[in-house]
Image (tube, rainbow, N blue to C red; front, side):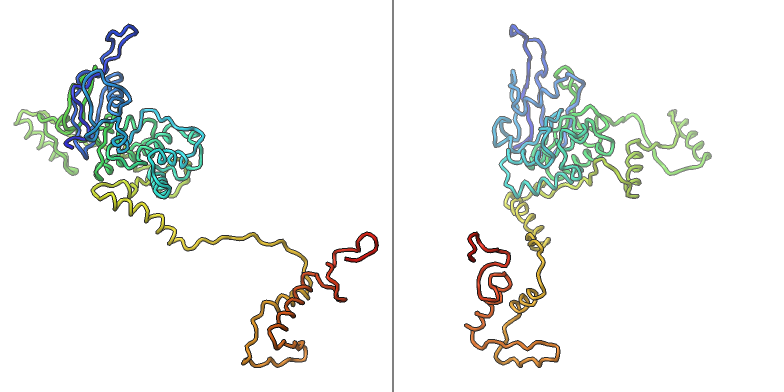
Length: 414
């Protein structure tokens, strides 16, 4: 497999009611996206980005040409099982909570219960929704819905991740976390196809980009090569004196070059992130999402499938072993008023039997001397009698009626 995604003369024409060609949404598109690459597909509204993604996934049939995903057809279940997709709009079951949503998608991929449990907790921690995982997703904000949508796109540990506007509706903190996550996923061997209107985000994370307009590629290449201005030079130094700055201007005038000397400005995103981080370090309470951007161990590449399965199965077992044995609390019996005599009887029943070699206890003036039966039959009889008295099944006269039972009708006794 030379390319993770390859399109050859891919074309999609939307026809009118009479079957006449009306709109060329995608026109003769040729793309080659290498494995372990973050590729940005850019363009204004209606340029064909979403149509291209739908044809890659087999959701739309191309008018001409073909597309390959991971060396195969996107409609093949074996190929689609290795693809994670975050659509532009997250279509989620609003009455399921976050855990139930991820469990549902995990079942669609045929994941085992232990694997699903481990991945769900790791993904919720990663996208910052662990604290609100029990809330129905219908109550989530748009940014929180994008977070759970990203988690469901990663539940199957995909080799190829297709993200359509992943940062829409996210606050600056969430946007920065998603960008960091994309970079770390690429470092772990994933291939990412990113569509976004936020060009600053694309510039930060993409290796290469392609700009579409009218369904055709207008420019493509490495981000650094496309944006670098080779006809200018930039010098960044520490703080210098005004006299030194004047000498630099004089030197540049001799070269007939214009120059502008000013203090560099920090990016607003960086300033915003630093301000929020300082507030978090002060442990200020918040009801919003909080993410550590820690990627689950299952989102990895370069190891064998057997090693992955061993980790997925061993992790829950190790956690249970560290937690110790499970203690099951049994329901306590209802409290009843027990006479002091019954307490004495219970202590006699639970005391260990005296061994033949044990020395007899020396009674004091206030202790009652008990006669220990010599044979096992006698000891069992004594225990039976004590139990009968404790349960109230034996009267002093030898009858077996309970004390609470009264005489039956007719004057007789049971």
